[in-house]
Length: 259
Length: 288
Image (cartoon, rainbow over all chains, first blue to last red; front, side):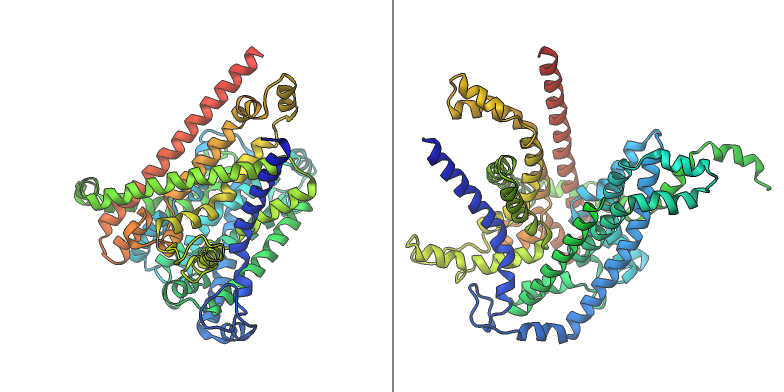
C-alpha cells in the first residue's frame, strides 16, 4: 500500500467517524422545524409551531420549572459539600485519605440503575419519593464527584504559602478562606457548579425511580414522549436543550481559561 | 467550659478534617445506605434464594450472557474506531485538532436520551440510514435496524466513543513520533514499525479505553431500552423491570448486586493491568 493511499484511507475513516459523532447529535435541530406530525429526517417544510406548542404547554413548563429548581439546588448543595471536601483532602495528609477520596468518587463509576433502585427503596420508607428534596439529594450524590475533582484540580495550583501568610498576618480561618483561598480557586468552584447543574439537568435514570407526575423533570418528559409517540415537539425541546448545554459548556470553558 | 477535658483530644484532629464530616454523612445516607439496603433486600432472612434463582434460571443467565456479549462487542468496535481518531488528534495541525475535539465533545455534552431519540429516527424503516442504503442500491427492502441488537450496538458505540478517545489521546500524544522515523530509517516497513514500535507503547491507553467502555456498557439502561427489543434485554432493563413491573424487589436487588459485582470485577482487572504495565515500564527503564 502506498503512503498516499494509506493517508487517504486514514483521513477518510477519521472524517467518517467525526460525521458519525456529529450527525445524529445535530439532526435534532432541523427535525424540530418539520411541518409533518411524524418525525422525519430530512425534515419537510419549515415551521416554528412546535416551539410555540412546547413553550405554552403547562406540562412541559412545569417540568422545566422542576428541572431548573432541582438543578440549581443540586448545584448549590453539591458545590458546598464538594468544595469543603476538596479543601480538607488537599490541606492535610492523613491515614485513610485514599479511601475517603475513592468513596467520594464512587458514585461516578457506580451503574446509575443500581443507585436508582437503591434510592427508590430507601426513599419509599423515608417518605422522600416524589418530593423535590428527594430529587435534589439523589442528584447531589451524583454531582459531588465532579465538584471534588474540579476543585481539587484548582487547589493543586494554589500556593499554600499564601494561606499561611494570611494566617501569619493575623487573619482567622474563615477570613483567609473567603478573602484568599476562595478567590484563587473560584474558577474550579464555578466549573464544578456548572458540572453539578448539568449532571442534574441531564439525569434521567435515578429520576425515573424518584420523581412522580408533580416532580417530573424535562428528561423524564422526554423519556415518556420517546416511548409513546415521536413528534417534532420533542425535537423542539431537544433543540432548546442543545442550545442551553452549548451555553453551559462555553461558560465552563471560559471559567477554565481564566484560571 | 465544662468540656475542657475533651479539648486536647479534639484538637489532635486537624481542623481541616471537620470539613469532611458533612459530605461523609451525606454520602453515607444517600449513597452507601441505599447500596447496603439493596444487599439486605437481596438476601431476605439470610436466604440466598434470589441468587440461586438467577444462577439456575436460563432466562437470567441469558440476560447476563447477552449483557456480557453486547458489552464485549461494543468495547471492541468502540476501541477500534477510537484508535485512528485519537491517532489523528495526536498527530495533526492545531486547526484540525480543534475541529476533531469539537466533533468529539458536542455529543459528549448532549444528553444520551436525546441522542438515542435521534437514532430512533435515523434507524427506523423510513429513516435516513435505510433511505441511503436503498439509494445506493445495496438493499431492496428496508433493513430492520431498530429494536435489534445491531441498533443497540450502534447507539452504544456512539455514546461511548468519547470515553475511549480521550484516554487514548492522552497516551498517544506523549509518544515521540521520531521513534517511528527511526524504525523506518532502520529499514522497517510502516506496518512493521507500527506493530513493533508504536503499538506496544499505546497498550496502557488501549487498556484504559477498553475497560472504561466495557464497564460503562455493562450498566447501560436508556439506550438498550429505547433502541433494543425486550427479547434481547440487558441486565439494567431486567433490574428496572423486576422493580417497576414485577414488583419483585428481592430479585431486582439481587440482580443489581450482580451488576455491581461484575462492574467491580472489571475495574479490579483494570487496576491489575495498570500494575502490570507500570512494572513493565519500570523494568524497561532499568534495562535502558
